Amino acid sequence: MTDEMLALALSNAAKAGVTNVEFLKGTIEAVPLPAATVDVVISNCVINLSTDKPAVFAETFRVLRPGGRLGVSDIVADDALTPEQRAERGDYVGCIAGALSFAEYRTGLEAAGFTGVEITPTHPVADGMHSAIVRATKPATTDTPSEDTGTTDACCGVDACCTSAEAATDPALTVTEAKSASGCGCQN
Ligand SMILES: C[S@@+](CC[C@H](N)C(=O)[O-])C[C@H]1O[C@@H](n2cnc3c(N)ncnc32)[C@H](O)[C@@H]1O
Image (cartoon, rainbow, N blue to C red; front, side, top):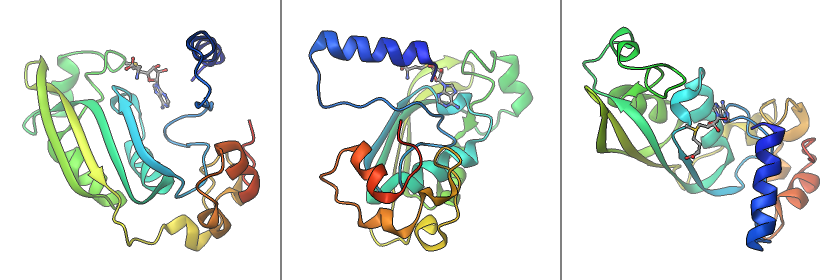
C-alpha cells in the first residue's frame, strides 16, 4: 500500500504485458471502491495484520455485490489460545500475534453479514496456529447498508462516495469509470 509497491506492481504489469488490471492505493479498512461493485475478494496473509478487523469485514461486505464471494488465505489460531498466548508464538508483524481464532473469524464475518463461512486449516505455522483458507458469501438478497444510508465515509473519506447511485453502476464499466459515474471522490 505504499507508492513504491504500486510502482513495482505497475512495472510488473507492464513487463508482463497485462492490460486488464488496475491498482488502487488504499487500505483494507477503507477500500477506495464504490459499494456493491466487486465479484470476489481475495487476499493472502493481510487480514491478520489489521488492527481493526471489524472494519475489514464491513468493508469487504460493502464492496461485494450481492452474491459476491470472499476467499482469502490467513493465519488462524485455535480457539483455546488467548491473545497473550498467540503473542507468545510470534510478532504482530510476523502475522502471528494479530491472528483471530476460528470462532472470532466466523463471528466477525457473520456480524458483518456474511453467510456460508468456511475456515479450512491447511498447514501449521506455530503451536496451535494455522494457515487457513477462509470462504464466505454475501447473501444474494441482502440490502447493502451504505446504499440505504449513503453516509459511509469508507471510500477515501469521501462522504458522497457511497450513495445508492453506485448500486446502479453498469458492471461493464472500468473501476475508474464506475467511480466517476457514482460520484466517488477517489479518482486516483
Ligand atoms: C504478509 S504480506 C502479504 C503480501 C501478499 N498478499 C503476498 O501474499 O505476498 C502483508 C501485506 O499486507 C499489507 N498490509 C498490511 N496492513 C494492511 C492494511 N491495513 N491495508 C492494506 N494492506 C495492508 C502490507 O503492506 C504487506 O504488503
